[in-house]
Each structure stands twice: as structure tokens, then as C-alpha cells.
Image (tube, rainbow, N blue to C red; front, side):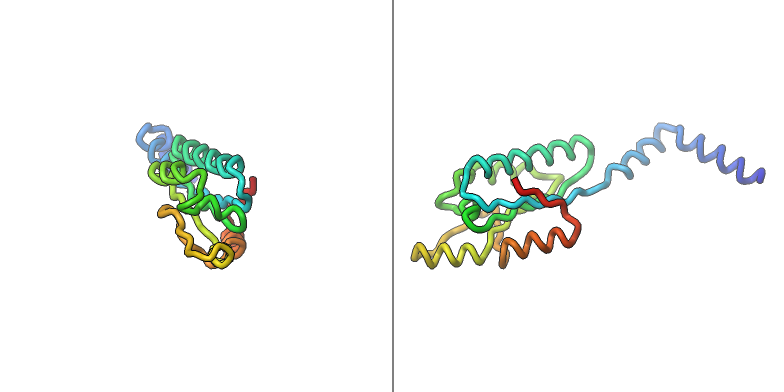
Length: 154
């Protein structure tokens, strides 16, 4: 019992030291948040709302010493957000991607929607360089949710 009491006193004393508190704080702030956004509307207001949310999340977690993995999945009419020729938010995509660190920001474009748009328009459609193509937007969102990601639909 005496050894236990001495160990407890030593642990309390160590926890009270400033260096230990900093190490403890670092361990607490290593959490990574996982957030998926859906964009399925060709509406610049919705697109900007999502990008505002993304910017706010990255800033909030950066200030807390935490990180976030954020993925914006665009499909259906929302794919226009990631089109190199039509995106009304093209500059914001580039700017947000450039300042994402230490968080990770991914823009995912639905291949199914892209093929449908190309067939309808009769020409190849280029996606912005900040985005990648995934087989299907709804499948990607399903996978992320199955992995425990928070899902946000504006």
C-alpha cells in the first residue's frame, strides 16, 4: 500500500510539471476529424456554403492543434462545381486546397455523372486539377460513412 501511495504522489507531481502538461496537451490534440460533404446541386450559393464550412472547419481545428480530413463529393448537377470550364467557385477550390495543411482536403468528382454529361454535351469535360475522379459519388459517400466519417449535406 505504501508503494502505491508513493507512486500516486509521484504521478501527481509529474502531472503538475509544465513540461508534462505540454506533452499531455499534445497527446490530447492529436485527434483527426473526418468530414464528408455532399454537393448535388448546380447552385453557387450551395457550393459557397460548403466551401465556407470547409474553411471554417479547417481554421477551427488548426486553432485547436487538431487536423481534419475533409472530402467534398460532387455528383449530379453538383459536378459543375468541379468542372474546369464552368465552375463558379474554381478560384476558391484552388485557394482552399493551397491552405489546407495541416488538414487534408479532397475534392471528388463522380465518374458516372461525368460520363453522362460528356455523352449529353458531345465532348470531353475537364475537371479542375484540385479534384480527382471517383467511380460514383453516392458510392464514395457511402464508403466514407461506413468508415465513420461525419456526413454533411447543405
